Image (cartoon, rainbow, N blue to C red; front, side, top):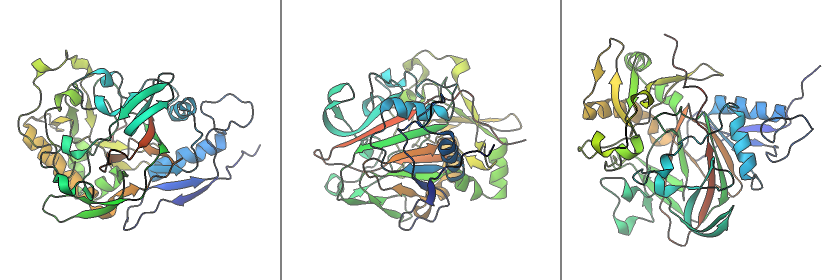
Length: 383
C-alpha cells in the first residue's frame, strides 16, 4: 500500500540580509483539523505531521501561517506529538518561584497548564484568564548597560539568548510552539549589539530572533570543535533563581561576572541528582548534524574529557562567549516578522532564540507558548 503524501508546500524562510541556511514556511496545512477517525496525538494527518517533523529537524524553525483558530488543547497535542511520552511543561514549577527571572513574563492557561500566555499590555479576558497585564521582557531589566530611555522606542537589543529548558531536574524540551494571537504592527527598530563591533540589525517590532546551533558549531575551528565535542557543561542549580541578581552583556549572550549570583544558602534546597551536566554539542536525530547547544546565562562549570573541571565562573563564561558570538552576527540571525495567526515551531535541541523589542504601553501583544520537558536527555556526539 502506498502511503499518503502531504500536499503541503515548503519554502525557505526569508528576511532581508539573512544569509543563514535554516528556517522554512509551510503552507497548505490546517493544524486544527483532524482528518479521518484514526486516533492520533495532535490534530494532523500522519503525512502532514511527518512533513512538519522532517522539515523542523532539517530547517530548525518552521512557520505555519493562518493558524489563528488553533486551540490551546490542539497546541499542546501538536507539541506533544514530537515526544508522546512527555506531558509536563518544560519549566515545571519554575514559574511558581517568585525569585525566578521567568516568573513575571508568563501566565498559565487554566484549562491547559502546559500552555503559557505571553505578550504585552492589558488583556481583559482570554482563555479563562481575566484582567491580566502582560509584560514583554525589556532589556533594561536584565542588561547592565541599557540603551538610554530617550532612544528606547527606536533602538533595541537581544534580551537573552537561550534554549527553552529548566536545566534542573527536567530534560530540555525537544520542540517549542509559539502562536501569535495579537500582533502590533507599524514600527521597526534598530537592534544594536553595543559590543564594540558596530554590528546592528534592522528588525520588525517585537521579533523573535533565531540562530542555528549547527551554524554555531560549523563556524568553529577544528580545535574548538574537538574541545566542544569532548566537553560538557554543568548548569547552576535552580538557574533562573541563581542568576536573578546578575546582569547581561549587551549582546544578550551570557552574563557579566560581578559576583551578583545568589549563593547556595539563598537558593531553594538543592537536590544534587537534579543538577544537569549536558554535552556541549547535541546531535540532530534526523540529519546527524552537530549543534553547539548551550544556554550561556545558566552555565556554571565546564567538564573536560581528561576529568578536569573549569570552575572559575568568569573563565567559563568567557570560553562560552568566544565559541558562540560569531554565529549571532547579523547575517546569521533570522528575525521572524510576526503576523497574527503565525504558528512557529522550533527545534529546541538545535537553535537558540531571543526576545527582542520595546513596546509602548498601548501596544498590545498576545502569544501562546508550549514546550514539554523531554522524555529523554539530548543526544551528544558519537565519541
